[in-house]
Length: 106
Image 1 (cartoon, rainbow, N blue to C red):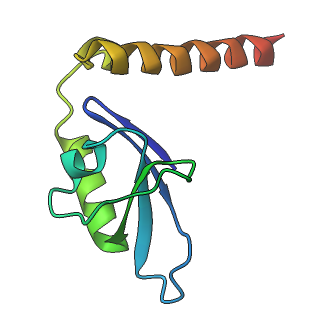
Image 2 (cartoon, rainbow, N blue to C red):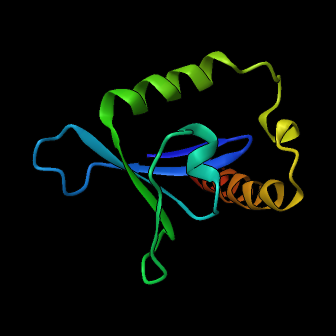
């Protein structure tokens, strides 16, 4: 699952925990995981698709994402993203999905 927040972009997957108790939370930018999961033990791997990753309890992930939803106060997500480079990256995704929508309508 991809999660786009004002201050972080996360990829959350179920990968490699035989107990099923944790999820792998991944990010492309330093600090994105910690922005949502302050106590996360983040590791950095240069040879991986996502440079930053942390194993986090599944229930904690669900709780924190629900909390983030509860904090929404904006009427337009794009306008709420303050950092220029993040905004530009998010706009690229928005544009790609808009084109996907337009192609679907044809």
